Length: 362
Image (cartoon, rainbow, N blue to C red; front, top):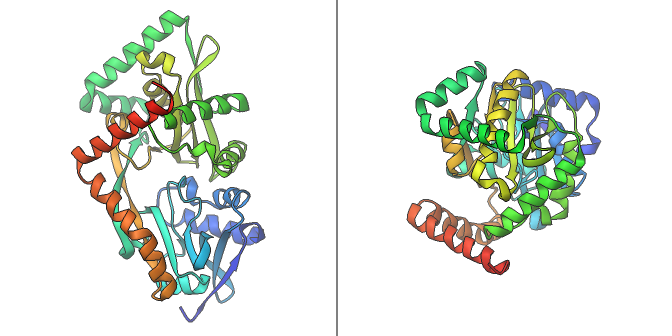
């Protein structure tokens, strides 16, 4: 790395030439154009997370890499937007020879934690502790081709969902789908549904954290070729019954926060919404919907394939790294132990659901 120099800046200090170089490096990387890896996402996080930084790597004065991250105490680092970002890593020129240890040294970090490392991130992959599937929907050949795949692999699911959609339309006097809804009131409704879902299932409410709520509101108004907020809503009689907020590039829709009105649960409005999203995305030239890491029946029913993402941490040997390992690794191992045992994971989910019901007096 002797010929490569690292300079750390706040994301807002990047100049136009640097952000354009970032975009060009991503465009020529060969990886799916995930919007979480674009400079707009890092800039949005920086507006709500003051510890956000970007390491700019230069060779002969030219930018050849960008590494966004957040700093924490004791020189520990974490992926930008860790906890909500669904694709993480560095943006490097193809063939750039830089190790994780060298990159961390240039940033003054003892460790860097990730939980959705992008596949192909050779700098950090040797440090991955766990590999997970991120289901995807391929609509590159159009929505009709995707429906044909569903008819072959999940015929009962597709038939049932389309029948529920027709029944919902008959009973409600019609449905209306908006792929890119700009009304902030619809976003507030989605966030309220999602918060209630988190509490109902015993999970931590992400939107109770001000930085996440503010980040999502900010991204809803973000419009850039590589990263735009997209709020999709299914309406019945003028009222929303299901919604999803995610990020899109020209070719990828990264699914993020889906939710629906429990009063309409018998119609499976969330599944109907995802089918209409796939149809609209295909019509808009998007080739892939990334459903994100995490097991869910609806993902298994909708998916046509999978990407791989990784969890772990890169560590630069030293006292600070040892303290980081002691604080994080035992919990990660316990979580992995439960997740890799379906029966135990099922018991854990049942417990979370009971906790959620108790909190709400049910």
